Image (cartoon, rainbow, N blue to C red):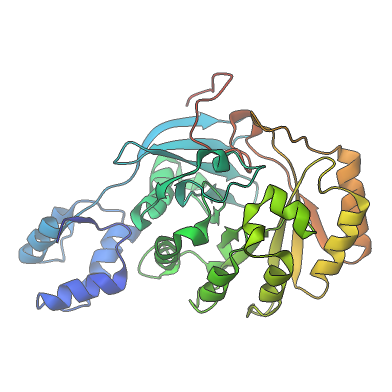
Length: 350
């Protein structure tokens, strides 16, 4: 067995590894406590493990976090992190503070294959999937760089990539995030975003991971959605909505529908009316997101008046609707702007 990063390694597999070598599986609990609770990355300092076990761990495992190549601070206080991976590829994460929470937007892929036309990440194509340790490592490395009062409280899988397209690594990362032995985050504080891969949503509902689901919808008719989100050719809107109607939501939980507003494309009165009908009876809230411009995209955001009118119609039909405050737009760190590319103008490094 080639040495593996212990960060991101599953609890069950660690227990199996120990059992195969005649070691009681409860030792996995002790190892995880050192690693995730005490953030101790040196096997020799895990004092309640025998020297033999520590030597075994050093032979088969190492402990490593992604390298923070740079941190760029936005005028609104958000920080974009550029991570360098072991193969030299780079990804981005964004830490966003507010009064009540400190949210980290994590990436699951280097690039993305879904090619949504309003998303800068989609222009990269897919370079590769991230491993579980690279996903978990973003959270750990960011927290290591922050003061105690700024530690991450919430995680959104809304960075580079489609999380469900990297299914196994994403699922393992979420399990580690919510495990009492590992990161101990509440499932209510984790949000998984998806462009609507129906077969994988169906698979995910059997994982017993009751995190929040955010659906990137962005259009109300198949023709428009296919033009801006090619995934709709495989999973039309009706199929996606029916899947969500049958999804076993926990009591008091609801879906979030993300709706990136594009001037003249999906912001008309008829779009608001169709959206209301589509979502009728589904426990949900709607986040209206003004398109965040990037080059060479030719889209524009609608006027604030148009967005407000769109929101007011949905509110009149008793939907819960928010106009999302765009964060980190000045450092290309907002929704749809992550692409691990140099910034212009030059960013403020911290």
